[in-house]
Length: 263
Image 1 (cartoon, rainbow, N blue to C red):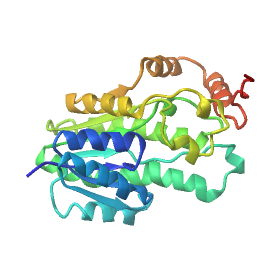
Image 2 (cartoon, rainbow, N blue to C red):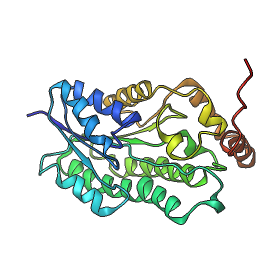
Image 3 (spheres, helix red, strand yellow):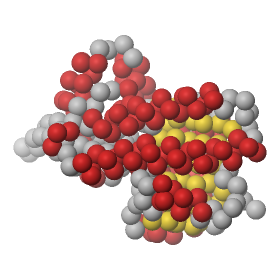
């Protein structure tokens, strides 16, 4: 029987590309997202000749995570890509409570609960790989994306702590993938298409996924995808927070996109 991989946020973007890599490598898949598009994504993944089960499920809730895990039907989870996440553009004081709460519940609460449930069984049998999608945004005070950046700061930090806690389980690895701005649906969903970062050239999600996969298979603790992002992540550790916040404002403030040039 093939090994089983669970991949969340797999309807588009990095999660979808990770699922394609896993399928090509012979993993059976349980893929999930909070939108109907996950069904079409699963149909595409089946062309690799592996078993693919898809779930449209709300991973911001504990019930949603429980439903996802129940769909594994008792099979050992050999690989988990905890990739689901959602952003929050615009000024924090203007945001509806439901918007920022969903971001926190998806990016933190649901992710942490999923990790706890999966890692317990992995550690018990001393076998399993986990890839967590963090972000270099977690190193930067995110003016006009404050909640999202803060959730990624939590995830980056949390992964480091749990990795140390389970270090005696030699057969279990946790890898944190930290991309920068990537060409996905994130910016449209976060209502950031009129921002500088929303309109600038972004990383290819297939390249980001491949970087993450290679680091995962090598058992690395972290991977920052892209050399420019590695420079930005390094600078974030020495540049004062106020300057980083101002730089992020320039990228993420509504209306910061350059006006179209006349031809």
